Length: 336
Image 1: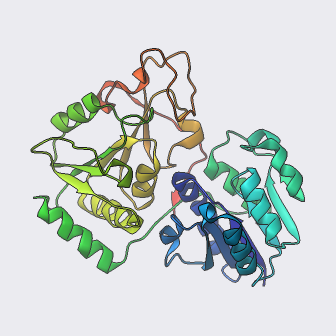
Image 2 (image 1 turned 135 degrees about the vertical axis):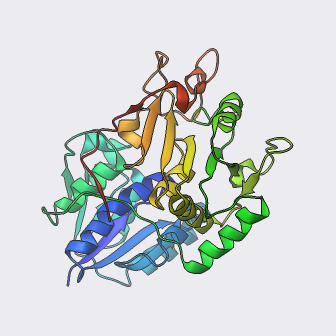
């Protein structure tokens, strides 16, 4: 039996992107033992995932004690290969810490921190953009060349679905009929939907609308008369259930290129993802419908977490109704 370690510490959306390759690997090599190491915050997304023998959670902010604990947990297994899907110093160091005989990762051009490749035993060039899903599949295909390109899939349990349906009904939303989810995030983030866009999308929706807010938006008030569904810290599994309910009801999600939309898409929901100066070829969910500002600013493409444009994030001052979907640029994908 071959034992493989998958290293993807963050971010949430990028972790989700890499799950398609992991699920495809399990489909083709069901006898292989797969271990995933990720940050503690994101570990619940992997609960019950077929093919994942073990999830090792890393408390990244807990200092050297957490590193020592991580090393001890990783060394409980002997890995034939560790795959660094992230491409920075932290992920490459975890691959080395694992004691794996082979440590593979993307080449310098596709790494967030190119010099971190010095901690690996082999680097592999990626034929295309630095999209996390494409990087993951390229690395895994070095193990199994015939691997199909699958979209990541997250599945909720019956208990999780029932609980989220109760939360929706409490807001006056019938989860068995089409409804629309608007993903509202911190307006200071240049990727977030602008308040005017949220209002326009809600007004144009033919379905009942619920505004989804995460833990970072705990202090955000969308206004009176707005249906608000709040997910707190440690409630990532609720996103999986919500996405599954949207999919089953024939609803739709509208939101920015952030983690919540990636999880909802992987749970099966139809997602319309708005991009301003960001490049969907590098970050969009594989099965999403990507909308890019019809007149993007000169600073495009942008991956900054802070907007440096003189007038602020003007690139997000548009709605999905004003643009046309653009191809994401990934290979043809199928659901797992």
